[in-house]
Image (cartoon, rainbow, N blue to C red; front, side):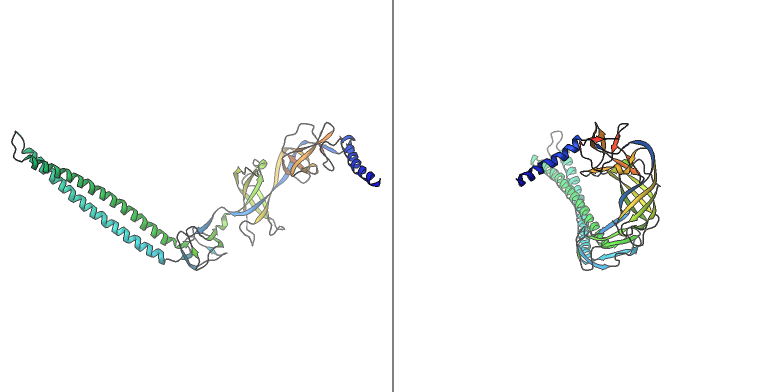
Length: 376
């Protein structure tokens, strides 16, 4: 019997609780959405990045012969950073030069052959004209067989000239290919000496002396220190409120107790289709003593004035199933409505989603969808 009563209690108590929630009105504090000015700080996560950086790589299959810099070294534009083995590359240049010389010789031979063929063609044409002139007025100085032979020689000379001209064209094309091969070999030899493309700082080294490299292998990473910025990600709702030149404060995760001043250098005009965020480049007045590329930071843009915004007390914002929203009083019942939010000043919060005039927002504590509410 006791078990039966327990089972009945398990069924009845939740039902009683549900009846109390959905049938008996619960007094819940509420506020009205109002239009007011809000003087707030916009905050967003960011990472340290560089507007000017380079990943230097190999352009040929060889080995690392010499390393002249390492991570943390400052370099000047044109400075030698690394030397790759030049032995095979120099051999390739010599082979390509020999092939280029041979191709040039073939062009000269083909040009001479064409010149001879043109001379023979001209001579055969003159012989044919002379022999045909002897066959006028019924006079036949030459036999028909001799005349046919002269005509055959003239046609053969024309064909020989055409073949010689085609051979010259092929030789010229081969010379161009050989020249391109020589230029490429010389370029690979030059590229065996890795130079700094700009003044910067070495942030990564991927290879050591003796390592084998192939085309595309990463060797060194270089950044231009003056181009370092913090790239912050803001919600798209703020894109019209952030202007270049605005003051900013940056706190790196490595030193959260230190705030570094900076300025908004650029507002990038593209929104990520997945996160619905846009990026802002913040230039720092001075870098921290210790920093690393990709380091996380928090960017704050203080004194962002919104003269007329739809606002509520910050404590009335709720989160349900991962979505931000408000509990709205509708027909004496609580209804959750997802909303987009903007800036906050610590006490009040901007609501970007337009709500009808007179909307009552309920205190979110202890509310359930459809719960019966008595708003005093």
